[in-house]
Length: 330
Image 1 (cartoon, rainbow, N blue to C red):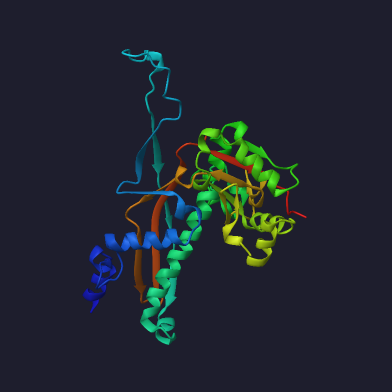
Image 2 (tube, rainbow, N blue to C red; image 1 turned 120 degrees about the vertical axis):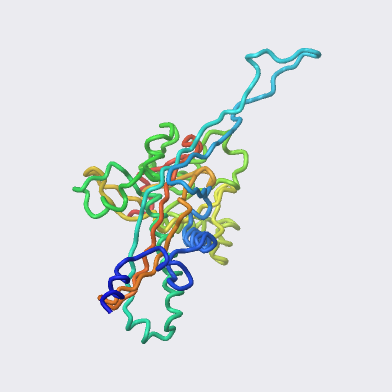
């Protein structure tokens, strides 16, 4: 009996390999979990998601952003100064490790209406919660956070997220101070006009990511107009069809709340982002794990999700960041 207990004390790979252990996910299951995780988010679902076997990897990018046509002369090639070559670059993604633990008591498995099937429900819930957390970290992470900034220091200080990257790398002319603006039409028009024209050839492919309260405020502003569009907004409640000049206005539930970074208060309700969704790269270490382990000493089974991810803008110039939006703050 003692030998059996000693053997159980060694937790090996075989102990968490399906079907006996029901722990370590197979590659197909890992992709499925990632799909569920992404589907529960808003921005990450539309972003350029890349997976890799390595925790750090590079994604090449290529573009031709300048004119290539020049006046031609019959029978003569273009001068060297008139020739254009594509611009290339690398987006480096250094994935960061995140872990979770969800313990479920033996009694709950025995007494609940789903019984053992509860494990499947828990897995879906973990995927949904993980997707929510990843989107929040992708938006709000900032390496300038310090211990003195409070509880957010631990989870949201591992890398620089979307807002910090735009604040740091986007051209200053494309960072819009919205503190004096009096209408959503003025705010959105200003953001679109600030984006360089070469990025506006297909407005329907762009996205205006805004806090939920500002999406609601923009809808109310549309509904208040004495126009057919205003009447339609009132009658049909086109909340999910909001758009500005063909650009979808997408409410982001997690773009909210007040935080502290390096002693300064940040209100995420006051930001809005204009970009192409595929301009945001999300890198995932492919080996996503959700291990299931029962500890008889606690009389509980723990579900332990582990993943690594990072976010980077491929082209910070292909974005506009609005800050200090005071609309709807009364």
